[in-house]
Length: 260
Image (tube, rainbow, N blue to C red; front, top):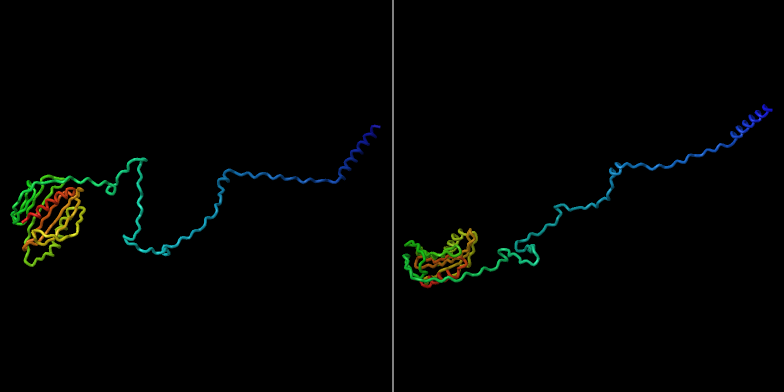
């Protein structure tokens, strides 16, 4: 009985084994899952972003530039100058010398007492009393104001120069210009007016005025007057502080009107 049961159990196992082999074998494909690609931080910094290409601009060669017409000094357009603003709103602007500086107040007139001088050069005239005299008995007589005004001592000079009989009045023009050219050497700035005909000692002659600025910035005004008097060139001149020009011009006029 036991043998029969064991045999049946064995047959049952073999039957089950054969039945499993006969079945159709099903193969399942393995589904591959895409793994994310690891990006290293170093690759991020090393990756260059490509910028869009810039447009190409073509500049003409220098020889292709249009030639500009030359302009003279008077034709050139004026360049606008920058306007300097005040540092503080509402403050008084600082004058810019010399454009914005106020006109200096004229000096008061200086008056002189006059006396008659008898010069060894052959002429007498009225001039301020008490002035210092420097003289060359034959050709030069100088009167100098002892008082200094604005750095200048006013001075009157009379000279006499002999010339030959062929000398003409119109030659005085060149002589006067030559004398002014010598005076010009003493100034850093110098300007003169237009020469004008004017008699002196009742003889025909020429005169001119000038303005000079010294190396120290002192303004000097002066006048030179020449005539041809009987084969002699007589020169009457003065120089003085520019701010007292009117006062010293009166001295010149007094001498001119009284010289004989």
